[in-house]
Length: 205
Ligand SMILES: Nc1nc2c(ncn2[C@@H]2O[C@H](COP(=O)(O)OP(=O)(O)OP(=O)(O)O)[C@@H](O)[C@H]2O)c(=O)[nH]1
Ligand SMILES: [Mg+2]
Image (cartoon, rainbow, N blue to C red; front, side, top):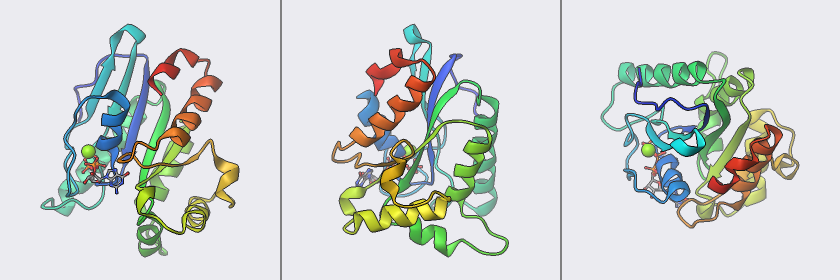
């Protein structure tokens, strides 16, 4: 179990498959450096960025799914830890940011869709909704995507959201962490914070 979490009343979590850019996003949000890398599985323990005066913590969770040099059993254990963490702190989590790779998410989802297989991203999205945690899908690495609207519409469809994506701006936020193009994410997160009367946290987003 992850047991490094500071005891805070309010939290925003970054969750998603390995190598999608969660820690890069964390670095942009906080201005602090966290390990990022060219291969999946860089973050193995949650990175917490603690804003004690505001009673708020921003958490970058380890990635799930494929990781180089990590066997199936260990990967499943990490995923179970992530699921438990989110369940345990569901009441404190004001917003979950599900980070996906805009270039490959739809292909990976389609490759893993079958009669007895639910793709990780889809599973996680529904899991967060079942827990009634307001969720924003940060569709990252959009700098690598050419057919932008088409890809985003397909992603909506796979997540069970009726296209066009533009009617889901509170949920779908195309971004590029690397290029500092994060405004759609900030807007979506602020919307959910506002709904929970937490405009005081806007300064972080
Ligand atoms: N092109 C592009 N690359 C990005 C972007 N954001 C992150 N990356 C790259 O994606 C790779 C993975 O980034 P990380 O931030 O380590 O990903 P992560 O989701 O934290 O990965 P794990 O800790 O393994 O779960 C790095 O090489 C980043 O430089 C982006 O917006 N565009
Ligand atoms: Mg990471």
